[in-house]
Picture 1 (cartoon, one colour):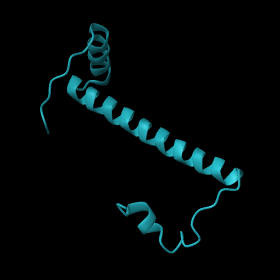
Picture 2 (cartoon, rainbow, N blue to C red):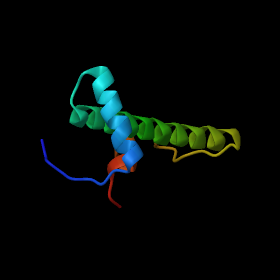
Picture 3 (cartoon, rainbow, N blue to C red):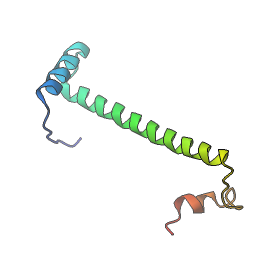
Length: 80
């Protein structure tokens, strides 16, 4: 693990301490869990946004390259 320091508002600190006491675990574990949940939620929102964009494209009749299925890795990972 990497040790770091952050500044919290008094309310944030109070809420973390209450949660840690309720769950009977260290405040550091509560903070890590909250960060993981937040990152997971943002990843899900980003994925949903991409899916929504693809759905909109399909509804207006947009199409991709004709060789997309055979060259998907090239289109996704090529740095060009």
